Length: 464
Image 1: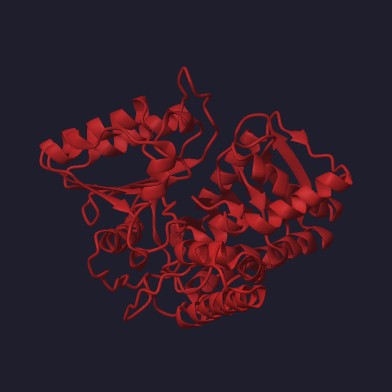
Image 2: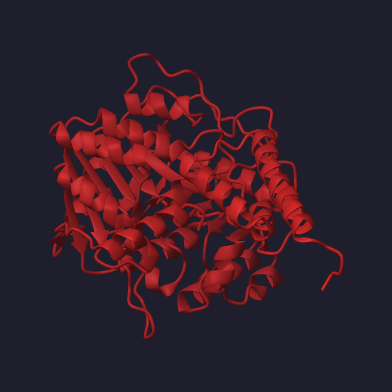
């Protein structure tokens, strides 16, 4: 094909391309200060060594996990907590999260019907502003009704902003948003699938879910949790069976933290300068206090992950976890196993079969290890999409983050750390209700092919 070009020439060229690809990986990781998980680092290097012609463009498109967004101060700032403050609050603030603020009138939605009614109620109560961030607005009755209600509010003079994830809208589809924009509402897509690499990586998804109304006013309120705005996350429809999920709404000063995070994300999504956000100093952590825990590429640390690992080591009585996808890394798995071995009751509730088959394969090794350590694992018969971690009577974490590598290390996520006993007891009651009808997990030793498949999925799955 190319006369005169010898095998030695092609081998030399291949070696040069491979070396260049490895150097690009090393320099990019160093310049962008990418503190990559060891498993991911090894996977990327092997991928580049084996097929550099495919691996290098793939890395340049999907390889980053932290955004190089300069800012004068942390996204959310807080004063140093008093020495008597709980370990959970001190840990969160050490990770750059805001001090606790008061929340009032907390409603934990017992089912999809109640969650949908709460969503409509919060939208209907808005008189000044509505800010909505979600991963998916479905092209179904729920999604269309969300757009219609937002458009009606915009026509009535309420300032409405809708931010949806680019890849989420591509994966799940979306309804026609023209009625909202025609009514004066603003819509933006957070990192569209096709965009300049300088804008952000396509695989760094905005998985945060928050509806904020009238921030800064007496009527301010937040609706949040794990639900996307599509039929299956509420009551289902003729085509989709309803999933079980967890969401909640509340009022109070805590709403201000959600508003600050939304403003920051909106500025990034619309290519404006992200404001340096400072939170008003909190009074001492009081009954009814909670704090927003933002996690993702815009945070220096892996905040939700670090908080859960710390919580596993600090737990004294019980750890309760609900997640649809359970693929912890070795450090988190070790922390949970050690908690179980030292007598902490570790309860894990998962769907018997999730909507992601690869996740179900990948979770098997961790489940066997955790069960051998003495943890109690149960499978719910329905698809369970909720995300909740409860530690003793000290902490309840609820929001959008799953217990897997994508949520803990890659996605933009948010959780709310509830510190008051009433809220924690409420989330515990929700957990106990959901585990009704669940069946105990029985570990089974895998065969050779199954063991190889699990290892391959775990090796590749970190970047998926």
